[in-house]
Structure formats: C-alpha cells, structure tokens
Amino acid sequence: MKTRGSPLRRVIKPFVQFFELEASGSVLLVVATLAALICANGGWASDYFGWLSGKTTLLLGPLSETLSRQGWINDGLMAVFFFVVGLEIKQEILSGELSTWKQASLPIAAALGGMLVPVLLYVGANIGTSTVNGWAVPMATDIAFALGVLKLFGKRAPLALKVFLAALAIVDDIGAVLVIALFYTEKLHIEYLAWACGVILLLITLARFRLRSVTVFLIGGFVLWWLFHHSGIHATLAGVVTAFLVPGTSREPGDTTRPTPLEVAMRVFHPIVAFAIVPLFAFANAGVSFEKLSISEMFTSKAPLGIALGLFIGKPLGIVGATWLMVRTGAAKLQPSLVMSHILGAGLLGGIGFTMAIFVSRLAFTEQELPAVKLSILVTSLVAALAGSLVLFKCPAGIADAGNMS
Image (cartoon, rainbow, N blue to C red; front, side):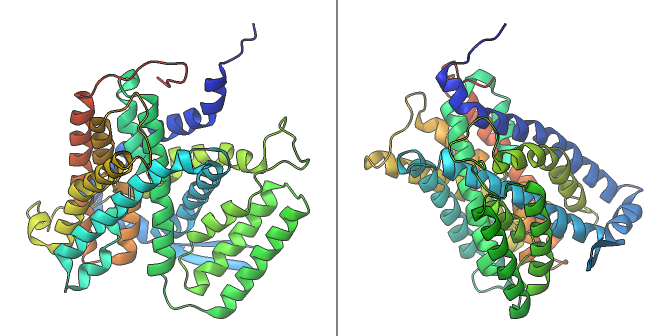
C-alpha cells in the first residue's frame, strides 16, 4: 500500500538521513577510539605504531605517491571526509538550512560565536609561547559525536534543536576549512597551483556543458589532491574544492525525477565516511600512550589547558552568547519548541571537538606536543558530552511531530 508522507516529512527527509548516519557512525567512533587507546597502552603498542608508520605507494596512471599508512589516512582518506563535508555544505546552501538568510542567520551567528570565544580563551592562555599556533584547535566541533549524543535523547530532543545543531556544526566545518587553507598552508609551489587551477577550470567547463558523470569529477578530484599535496596547500582541501564542482542540478533543467550528481555522491560517500573513514581516522590518531602522560598536564601545560578552556568554556559561552544576542536584538527568533537551556545543551555538545580538533592539532603542533594535546581533546570532549547531556536531560521534552526523527 502506497502512502504519502506529509509535506513536512518530505522537506526534512534529507536532513533525517544525514542525522541518522552521523549519529549511528558515532558508535563506531567510540569503539575505534577505545581500540586505539588499548593498542597504544597494551602489549600491541609496538605493532600498532609500527603498522601506522609503514609505507604504502599508490599509483594512478602517471601519478604516484608514497606515504605512511597514517599519512594516507590523515591526508588521503580525510580528503574524502572533506569531500563529504563540502557536499553537505553545498547541499545546505542550495536547498537546506543555509539557503536563506532567515534560516541561516541564527546557526551562523551561533557558530561564529562558538569559534571566536574559544580562540580568545586559547590565545589568552598561550600568548607569548610557541604553542599559540594551536589557536584553531578548540574552534572545531565533531558533528558525528555531537549528533550522536543528541540522538540518545530521542523525542525529548526537539527536531528544531537537531536542525540547529547540525546547521551550526556545518558552519563550523566551513570555518575549519577556511582556517586550514589560510593559516596552515606551507610554502606554496606556484607551478603545481597553476596546474590545479587548470584542472578546476576543466571541471567547471565540463559541468557547464552538462556533464553529469560523478566518476569524472572523482578522477579530477584525485588529480587535484596530488597537485595540492605538492603545492604546499593541505591536500585534504582538494576534497572540498571537488565537492563544490560536483553539479547540484540534473542534465535537463527542471528534471526532479532523477537524483543530481551531488545527491548521488552524498548517497555513496556519506556512509563510507561515517562508518569507515572517520572511525579509521580515530583509530590511527587517538592512540595516546599514557606512559609519560598524566591528567595534571592538562592544567599545567598551556596548550592542553587552552584547548580545555576553549572547548568546555568557550564553545558554550560563544554559542549561547551569540544566540541570545540575535534573539534579544530581534535579528532572529528561536523556534517555539526551544528555550535557551536547549541552546546551552547544544553549546556544550559543540565542545566535543574530537575528530576535527585532532585533525587540526596535527597541523599545529609538533610530534612531541601532540600526546598531551590529544589527551586534552579526548578528556574535554568526554566532559563536554556528559555536561551537555545533563543540561538537555533537564530541558523540557520536545514536542513530537511529523518530522520527529526518533
């Protein structure tokens, strides 16, 4: 028997799928993190670190690259992660929560506040030291973990809160991408950048001539990755650039019967990223050896302390403060099912930095500084998750409606 969903359900269907994938993937993220910590601190430590440092060569026609396995995960597979991030951003701009200023203003303001205040707290704790270079680490929100915690509340969490947190985290990702591109780029090699621009122009031209083969854009994306890798720009940004080149319309204008290349790419790669790449990244990077570390370093070393302050204090303070200011001035309105305590809970969940924070930390810190920094990220993210859960548990239960996802 064929049934028709309500207009509301049809409108939010893409968001429902996005939310479910991110929330479900967070379970594997936890498992991978625990596995990494066990391997790094048990009898398998030498095998674990040895496997990560092993070299692998990848060939694609005339292009070849040799990296360690951890290098391939961090620079190669994470380019696919950023490809999906780019697809999500483009989808939101075209038809989602960022498609109009009325919809986008509140999460954009909240995300900006949630990026700016953590940076100020981190810089305040590290000013005058070499570790001040890590200022971008507490800016990041791990969207999978944050939505995964929210998923645990079922119908108690209003749909509007889930949409708000997802949109906020996507804007947060835009900020992280821009920061990596502008502030964590090595010495530029113009010749490789020139070739990269040529590839981008070629893909734009193919899209203008209504080429809709996702495979062609993926091949172009790999070439871009190789060129970016040798140009000095962080190679993962090739994923974002490629995502924005993937067409968001069908071959025939106005054709809504077939999925667009953008939708096809999201359908294929989002589960791969959520259930394989992000957990693998966690397994490769969360393995902190506690042999020479202690929790006390979080309070005595400036970089770990700045990260803890930024994620646990700065994130909720910035998100709640910016939201309150927007609502107070009449620039935006909260949905009727939300109160400010919901925003506080979401702000605390925004302090779960984890994947993105670890990724940025690898660009900002030396190998000697990383263990204490990673420990700070892990501990603070856990505390933020617990504090956010406690606040949301005491919030009014969400109103069940046709769009509720639980």
